[in-house]
Length: 238
Image (tube, rainbow, N blue to C red; front, side, top):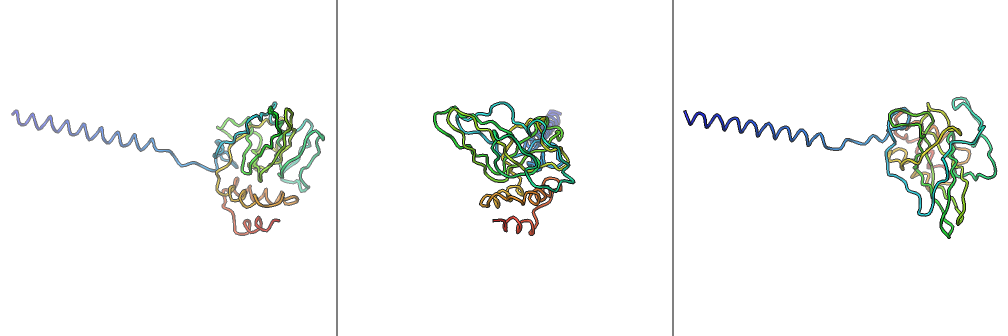
């Protein structure tokens, strides 16, 4: 009788250990990091864009908000507009940098040091509409910096920069004064990175903005990989 009880208790003990081990394994498996969605926040995909966070140089700060336009900025229809970029003029106080289409970023950079500083806004950097709470797509399209932009900021002074950017959300509204942006990550989307890499050694593609924008939308809004023709086109630019 004692022998039977002993084996019965050992069976219960072994079953308990096996169950606990199984439960632990399931918990550990669930803790593994999930795959990063490099289309998050792009096109019609909800979420926040993924990538490496960008930091401004020491002594450089942003004064006020990053606005998506100036008051009374001209409003256009992205689906019918066939003109050139930029599609409106601003005060001479602002200096235009880079190329882009439907996103303009008005930024005041202040330099608190005793020496002039060049601020580099890197190709691949994304600017995000502050109304985007990461649970939806926001109101205004995100901006993608195509090529590195160098902005000189004098000592103890402010540089008024209008940085042009490309649209990452075809269905959202073009930037405007009502849009307040924040600096997002340097994208880790492989297709956008390939565009950035090819264009890093190119001249500013003046007059080619819409064709480049179409290529960007093919990636962000249609989830396509770059075609051989698109890569050849980008490589053909001077």
